[in-house]
Image 1: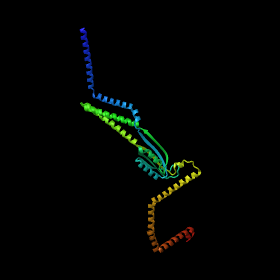
Image 2: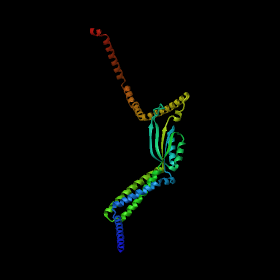
Image 3: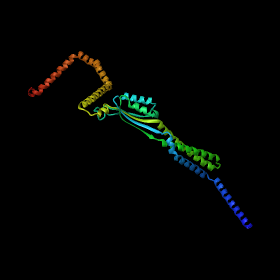
Image 4: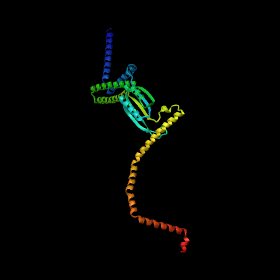
Amino acid sequence: MKKYYKLLILVVAVTMSLVACENFNQSSFKSEKTPDQILNDSINLDNQQMRMTNETYQEEVAADQAYLIQKADLYFETLKYEEAKQALFEVIEKSKGSIHYQNEYLIDGGHFSDSEQELRELILTARIPQANFNQTIEKLQDLPDVSLQSSSRGSQDVTRSVNDIDIRLQAVEDRLDRLNALLDQAEKIEEIVQIQTEIENAIIQRDQYLAEQANLENQIEQATINIILSERYVLAEERNQNYSFIGRIANTFKEALISTKWMLENLVLLLVAALPFLMICLAIYLLYRLFFKKIADNYRKYYPQNEKENRMLNRAKHEQNIKQNFHPSETDEK
């Protein structure tokens, strides 16, 4: 019986020693992790955190504010270009907006005009605070001296992008905190260098996310309005009407008056451009009248006899030549 007790005690002692050795090996294995294993554990923790955040994203979006990028396109025609352009700039300025792009150029008279006079067209892009977007659109549509030909409005929902960037930024910040904690505990040079490299990479990634976040915030806070303002002889509303014969005559007469006006203005401009040449010609004529003509008159006054004798001699020679040509026989007999 005693043998059985001794054998049982021996088995229990061996079992306890094996368990103690296994716990010791596990603790020593954990304490002997390499820097690569530590960094991999940190990255895996970041990915796990992002997955857990994405799983609860749909629930958070329902309670969060929606982020929209507002945009509009407007096309105007006008008969009074300068007045309409000035009114347009005033609306943008009063709405606390800014012009990010502006292009103004000349176009031809168009298919519906026989005039070759060039017209003007303005293309611009304005950025308006989102709070003033709807009010600005209404003011632009009610501008005087313009005719709205087309308009379009739209918005892009970027709520998911904004929340994704926030989640990624938070994950990078948490990773930087853990890396800094590991850097404080690191003792070997290899560990310090590797952790510092990971910290630099995390900082670069954070800066990229911050730049994307700033760009999105700017597009959300500032709505975009693209505007085209075209000068016309006749507005599209009049061109697209069902013309009667009298209406066509009236429009043709109107265009003829406009063309005549441009032609007269161009003629005046041509005269103004030729004014220096005309002044030079006038100066030459006055010099001739004042000086050269007087010299010629004085010469004729003081030498009239010589002039008469020369004329008589020339006339006699001329008559003699005529006689010789018509009576050659008489001259031969003599």
